[in-house]
Image (cartoon, rainbow, N blue to C red; front, side, top):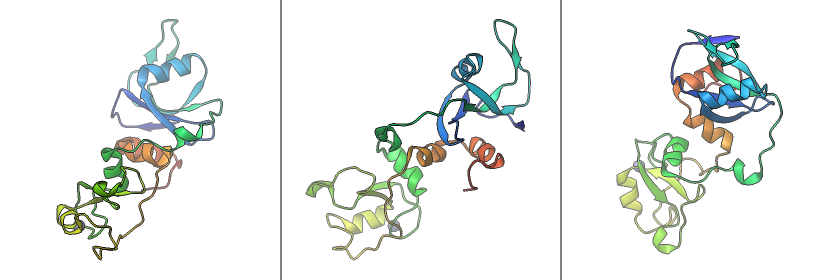
Length: 178
Ligand SMILES: [Zn+2]
């Protein structure tokens, strides 16, 4: 069993039975899974073990795996759009010039009916956003460095993890190094 340094003590990464990233839950919920034998510990933290009311001792989990496969309905496979999620998807990098960016850029502008969806938005710097104005990228002669993608729940979760949690999954060989 892998051990990792303590970090984000109240969060536990939950993997599906297939080892896919499923969610991040509070420690008490992960412990409930373990006590009900719905999950097993994949990675634990160094330190004092936990003791259940019935006297069972176990290490503090940082990653658990569900013993039964959970099939996600389609609507749960695509995360809801948010600016925070968009910043994570695009890594705070302007989609046009590659410099630091932090503003939401609608490819089809909102004033022309453009919606805040994963495929109609990218992160841009203020300069590029201003330069583009009320036009489409083609009209403004701006070229996207990469097409806007729709994240899956897995990729969105992975991007939302804290660095130690991501490192833990990489260390376990469960996800490729980012
Ligand atoms: Zn830019």
